[in-house]
Image (cartoon, rainbow, N blue to C red):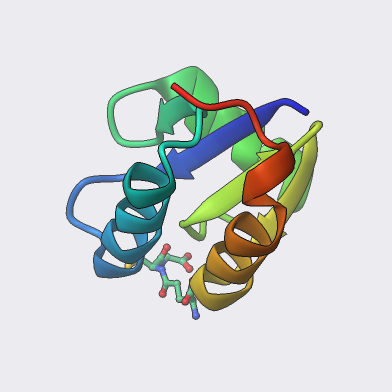
Length: 82
Ligand SMILES: N[C@@H](CCC(=O)N[C@@H](CS)C(=O)NCC(=O)O)C(=O)O
């Protein structure tokens, strides 16, 4: 399962999700929308929003930090680790 994490450093909700990613040692590709214009443009064109955090799960975007953290915890056993 391919995971891509859209975020930026100053976003507190992104930091919560990042803690979960790190604690569970889950492998994700990082897409910093402040530093990478391609990631920013992709998020907008796919979703019509520039809200982060957003986790792409096999190219399907999921918003809401609480939902993302729950999904990561529920699926951790089957996800690729670092
Ligand atoms: N309820 C959302 C809040 C996310 C949120 O407010 N993100 C801010 C950055 S900290 C944002 O991206 N705001 C810009 C926008 O939504 O257009 C969550 O928990 O994920």
